[in-house]
Length: 220
Image (cartoon, rainbow, N blue to C red; front, side, top):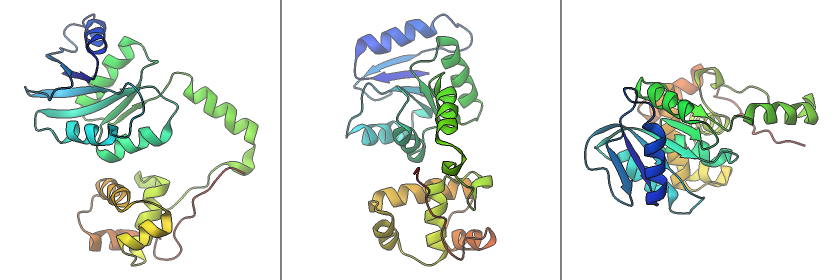
């Protein structure tokens, strides 16, 4: 595997942390602002802080022919950034609040073909507390395609495609950029198992998306 970050102290620290698990993971590259040179099964992409250029850098890592799968290793608490990492094609997300063993296990699971999302250890407890405090009236309802793995935003966009809207129309209606719409469409297609717009329309019709698109719910 390879470790990628902008700072040498970070990549070397991570490498030392993972060195306690020989036979399970092997770090063959520690990259500081350089591309991965040799073929690796998994790259651990360590994001130091939110940055406008982060999406492009992550996309480059994901697209690299030298990298098999990519795990984003960052601080939790920013669901939009985590979701966007998966939209770009990341195979996993691991919070920096997790221990070394949990990181190793996530690497093994991703290498085995799973998609792993491992948030801050206290995230589930915090989320449960938030739901309890907010009461049942603010809990989200289900949406068409949820059982097949579509996120609420992906389902909304596929519903609009099913109704015949263009990408430009969808972007205007959902207050998104064209590139964001295309990213959501690509990720939705992967989950749906389709490769064309016509197939997506048929899929949407079969899954009850031909009428009104699912409305995005917000907390009161």
